[in-house]
Image (tube, rainbow, N blue to C red):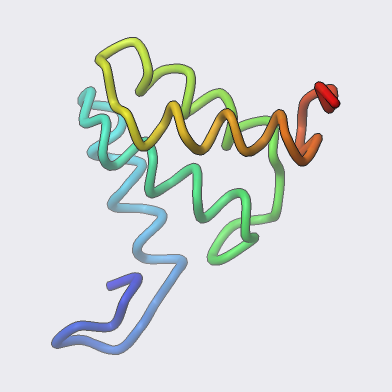
Length: 83
């Protein structure tokens, strides 16, 4: 739904379903929901929950989450910029 493949694009509904999957431990859903928070698509833009979701996904070795959190530190989004 976030991409609008076969259905109208709807970020709010996507966030709802990603949240449900993330609550059940799906690391890909955590990363996708974090991306929505980072962009402010379907949810209020807030980098703190985006980074928290990445940290949770990292606990199960999600490499995309590792990349996204690293980028947050590079850009200082919701965390202290490292350089």
